[in-house]
Amino acid sequence: MNVAVLRFPGTNCEFDTQYAFEKLGHTTKLVWHEDEKLPTNIDLVVVPGGFSYGDYLRSGSIARFSPIMKAVTAYAKEGGKVLGICNGFQILTEAGLLPGALKRNNNLHFISKLQNLCVIHNDNAFLNQCNKGEVLNIPIAHADGNYYIEEAGLKKLEANHQILLRYSDAKGNPVVVNGSVTSIAGICNEEKNVFGLMPHPERALEVILGSDDGIRMLKGFDS
Amino acid sequence: MTATVNIFLKEGVLDPQGKAAHHALDSLGFSDVENVRIGKQIILQLDCDDKAKAQAEVKEMCETLLANTVIEDYSIEIH
Image (tube, rainbow over all chains, first blue to last red):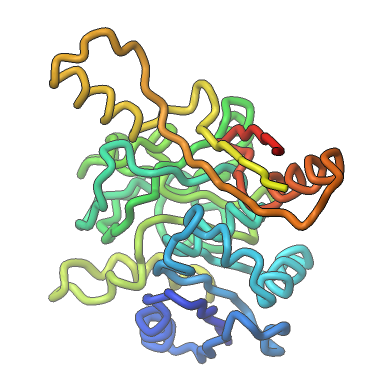
């Protein structure tokens, strides 16, 4: 698989993301935000975590107007797979490629810890290697991860199996971490080719560092 | 011409900063406070003499970039 990893001023998870996909045997390429085209023959675009443009105005609000985002939008509209992690998720919601918005955490803290997540739906190109109801332990590190969507939008997400992950306890029961609507940690679009999540699967690749549950998540794209 | 844009979270969208400030004011003994909302103000200097044109332009700026209308409302004053 060929993976394009975007890089904006302030992105800081691009190398971790490359490491993760290369560990899984894929080829990766960093793509600068000023580029107007994505590399040819790619199978996945990853918008990695960080603090693009210093999170000024709103997280992701400036990055979404970078030249490369026009190419990413066109790629997504043609059915190309796009994954946004943390700040990448925020950029994809700001760009309108994913519904809803990410607000400041309810407790106003930057939350950085290993967090249990319950797999809600796996009938998609991302979480197909995980079981429904399975609990994964993945790091989170964000200040603006409080997912908001209005009632009608939430119903649509639920009906269409677009909710991928919820923050949970070790048994899979939802828990309040940052104030997200129904504890949502990750979603996909209606067409199920654009994915976004606040947790960092690329930081969960080795048991010695806390968890390797990220491997199973990221493997999904290749199957 | 100057445009002042005020942006607040929509009614019904929890404002955690407002809530924290409200709680702090309450702790300080300001017990009359019923609600606190925290937003942001953006002041734009415009090279434009036409008030209606400025209003329309700033509205477009708000819809495109300055506000996220999924969660925020905005108001514009032109002077």
